[in-house]
Amino acid sequence: MIDSESPVDVRLIGIAASVGTIFEWYDFFLYGALAVYFSVLFFPPGNETAAFLASLAAFGAGFAVRPLGAVVFGALADRIGRKRCFMVTMVIMGSSTLLVGCLPTYAQAGVWAPVLLVFLRLTQGLAVGGEFGSAITYVAEHAPPSRRGYYASWLNTTPTIGFLISLLVILACRRNLGEAAFMDWGWRIPFLVSVLLLAVSLYIRLRLDESPIFRKMQQEGRTSRAPIRESFGSWDNLKRVLIVLFGVTGGMTAIWYCAEFYALFFLQNTLQVDYKASYTIVAVGLSLGTPFVVLFGALSDRVGRRPVLIAGLLLGALTLISAFHALAHFANPELSKASMRIRIQISANNCSFSLFAAPVTPCDKARKFFSRSGLSYTFVAAPSGADLITQIGDKKLSGFDESHYRQALDASGFRGATAEVNYVGVIAILSWLVAVAGMSYGPMAAFMVEMFPARIRTTSLSLPYHLGVALVGGFLPFVASALVIYAGNIYAGLWYPVIIALATAIIALLFLPETKDRAIS
Image (cartoon, rainbow, N blue to C red; front, top):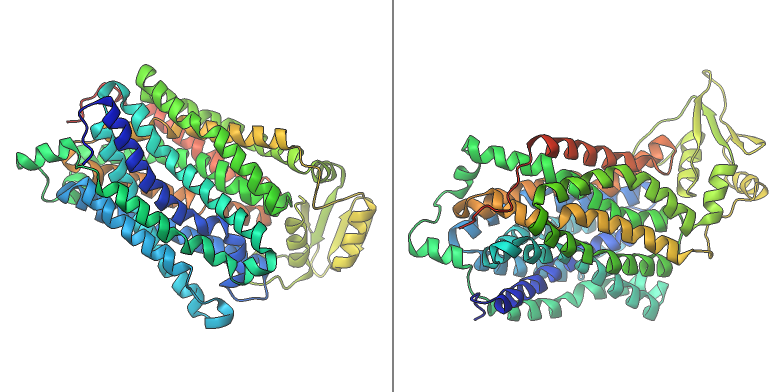
């Protein structure tokens, strides 16, 4: 067994716990990286936009159930031990991911395909809901007090590393198999190979010993018999739960998921960067930005958790929109120039907005066309009975005809897909976004552990963390994509994370305590 009597042992414990957590995040994020494929494979054909949004909603379903997993497995960790709990969640996650790789598609099983897919996403969400809180508590309870932020922050790098590995595995499969084979059957490989990662992770974690703080509580008979009631039935502790939820996790999640997941969607679907370039860009950006999570975790050991957390929230809120403008400029300069140069205006009186119904009216079809092309437009309500009039540059078109729209865009100098990516610029922007996310994410693990008493620690910190992630992060790609279609502006979706991050920063300024020097035993 690996115990915790020296700094070397603490490092080994952090690495061992992180390996298992990386595996679980790899499993969980595979779906997010393949959302475009799942929209085709598992949902009814006929409406690309609706299928894509439905696939994002299924992605969000895995997040929605995470608070339940947090309560169930958090209470289990406070009753039977941190180690036992994250062994159980690992097996659940590994089994669910393996089964996703065996699922029939919509063409093979009809409506059962999305039903089974959503069910497995829910079981994955339950597992992650129990895993992360147990692992954070486990590592922090081993760490020396003066370096708790540093050691605990390593666990906060695991979601990014898991996401990065999933991107690299998918990229390798797509490049070696080709697009046709990958779409047909190759998409299953990243899910099926996770069984090997499961075996390695289980072997490593079986060698870990239980947290010394939990062992001492167990020996002295001080473990909680009702951790859920103690966590949420007492106003003193519930107040701490609410501070963590509204003063940390909501804003942190908005910035983090925008920097990683929405950035990938934006590159591929809005800026029309091909998958090889977009995966490579995101992989390098994550690799360069992720060390800042540990850097800011260590900084919080010196200056305190509160100032680092609040600085990250404010920087994220103030720079997200400008960062995505710069991302567009570097990733697809021709499209960016065309968006500023070509004036597009839609005038009609029969526009509607439905997330899942196929566009029926000419106005709806026009809006979908421009959103899919990565172009912003303005909408002007027309008098009752007026036909759709679209102005593209100096040319006015009546009704909707996609070929005529494309001819007008071509005449205006519009080019969609690009081969002129400024890799240095795009990677620099992504690295900045990940670093800003790391400013609030790095100190968060130690802060949450220090906020709650040991006997109900895992239950108390797991719920606000996963509730914030579920409400904000899980549905961020879905809500942001829907806002873009609704508003006709490719940057409209960014107001969702900006407002949440800013509101969280204000609450943190008012209510967030400093916890750096608190004893946790």
